[in-house]
Image (cartoon, rainbow, N blue to C red; front, side, top):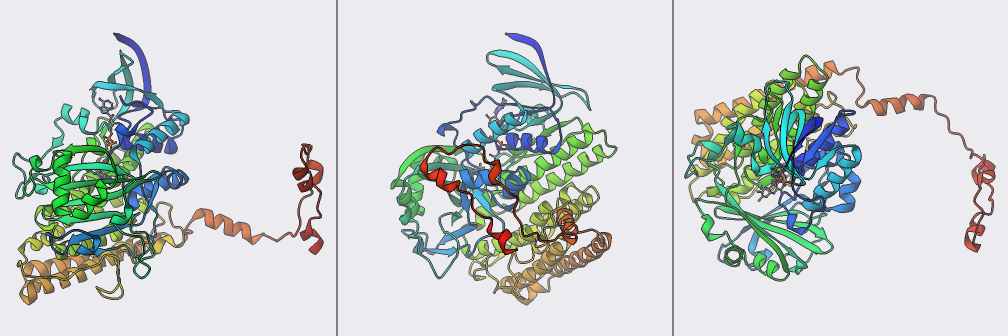
Amino acid sequence: MYTSQSHEYDVVIMGAGFAGICQARHLMLNIPNIKVALIDPRPEERTDKDLKVGESLVEVSSLFVTKELGLYEYMIENHTPKFGLNFHWPKDPARTETIDDYLSIWDNRQPSITTFHMNRSKFERDVLQMNKEMGAVFYNGRVLDVDLTPGDAIKTVKSKVNGEVIEIKAKHVIDAAGRRFIIGNKTNNLIFNQVGGGEGSDNLYGVNNGSAWLRVRNMDRSLFHDGYDPTSATASHWYATNHWFGHGHWLWMIPTSTDPLELSIGVIHHHEVIPSEQINTREKFLAFLKANHTHLYKLITSGEQIDFHYLPRVAHSSKMVFSPDNWYVLGDAAYIFDAFYSYGATMISFAAESITEIIRAKLAGEANAEQKRFAFNEFNLTMARSANGVMRYHAKQLGNASVMSWRIYFEYMWWFGIILPLFIGKRHLDITFVPQFTQAFSANIDGVLADVHKQFNQLDRGTNLGILDCYRADQLIGEYYTSKRFDDYLENAKYEPGRTNIFASIKSAYYYVAIWYTMFQWKGFGLAGLLAPRSLYNIFRLLALSSYTAIGELIYRFQTRNLPANSQVEKMRQEFKNYQYQAQLQPWTPEIDSPCTDQQSSEQAVPRLPELSVLS
Ligand SMILES: Cc1cc2nc3c(=O)[nH]c(=O)nc-3n(C[C@H](O)[C@H](O)[C@H](O)COP(=O)(O)OP(=O)(O)OC[C@H]3O[C@@H](n4cnc5c(N)ncnc54)[C@H](O)[C@@H]3O)c2cc1C
């Protein structure tokens, strides 16, 4: 049946998974009276069958969900906490019976920004309900087609809802329907790995991976760790995202519920080392664990298994994410490369904020709206490329504890020093900052980051760089650790756009990356490596970027010299100028209007003298 009944909105979001519901809420929180519709075929009451991966948040995605979407209390009350990332490599791949058979890097203290694990089906169900309460219209149906008209012309989303075909119209259309690729397929916008893929492939930096995972409940947690480790950490080992490594693969272990105790355990495997047909069923996955991570096998089989999934192809990307024709691809509909570092929700956070700002500027008819669209499109594609780039050569390097510990330390430096401050400072929405940043960062991805990843492949098999612990401050110089300087500007609550001195953090990050890089060349390749022209070029370039950012910092300081760090704090300080303590209480007993009904409450209602007024 076809109905011509018309439904018109400012924005239609196709897909109400994590990306779609977060985008809807962000739009409604930031653009007053915006009319938003969501379409998704899955029922609103999502069951265990909807258990999805994407359960681990990191600093950016956690801040997006808690601070930007206003869901702090909701997250604390409904999902499990997360205390950083732990990393484990077998000392001997033939012996993996207990945690003691692994070399481990443990997060040793509480992270300065709270992060969470989430039960995705619960999150999506709850936030969809909140969106409806805020005014979003939800169509429980399936998008059949979308008419991508040019420019500002109204777009039509043809959908099947309750057996009827309806037309939903809007100026802006967001594809958040995951791997359905509604817009991607229609516009030939997708990038997949070349046939055969693997190392040497130009697309997706050769990342060619698949994934198998399952959930297990009520397992014997002590098979992982007994929880007693008073001399090593102030943070829980269990409520971290634990990572287990081996040749051509890594595994995650994420606690997604406390009652019942529930775990998500899965593997990302690289096809050139572990082909699909060796791991694509529950039985094969368990057999793989029994042989390669015996203690995880024991942990799983001590509990009740809930589900099993296999995804043969994880990585893909897009040529464009925000079109001049008012269509947008978001979340899995746009790109995903690997689950390592939980980049999925992070990239959604950057993109969702960008989309809101483009739509806000376009609906308001602002002159630079298209300029923003162009710059934010480039920026988000660059962020995606960097997320893709940090997975380069994983197939060869994941199992090597020394190499990976150095890689993780190195990649943490960029994360805490550059990407996280950028997000907190909202510089990704700053139209003067974004183009410069995109250009410099893009050069880093193909420059020093690519060089380092490649050089790890070139190390002699016998070279042992030792282990670098990304949480400790006794390995580089000056008591530096990877998250040391990143939040200096947060002490004074400088969260307002334009007030955050992220230049200090970036300057320091480039400087310490130069030190790390020098140490890496020396330890890995000796004097010849250090003095190689390419190494000298990278060291001088990093130091030049640090100096350049220092100039940016001076300009920033000059421009903000008369601005308070935070306008709310400033307002309160002003109010304090006229503040005088008044030691008094307002009379209240005559106000009592409900008569007491029982003995206890009549005792409580006996009027008492306000003691403070007596003291004064
Ligand atoms: C193995 C693995 C592990 C991961 N782990 C993490 C992690 O720990 N942390 C992290 O941040 N990221 C992680 N990710 C990435 C994360 O899963 C994705 O970023 C995230 O799930 C993307 O959400 P989404 O809303 O775009 O897609 P989805 O969650 O797939 O939502 C798409 C929605 O579109 C709907 N839909 C489908 N077809 C239609 C249609 N025709 N019309 C309308 N609606 C439709 C679907 O019903 C669904 O609700 C992981 C990814 C993988 C593969």
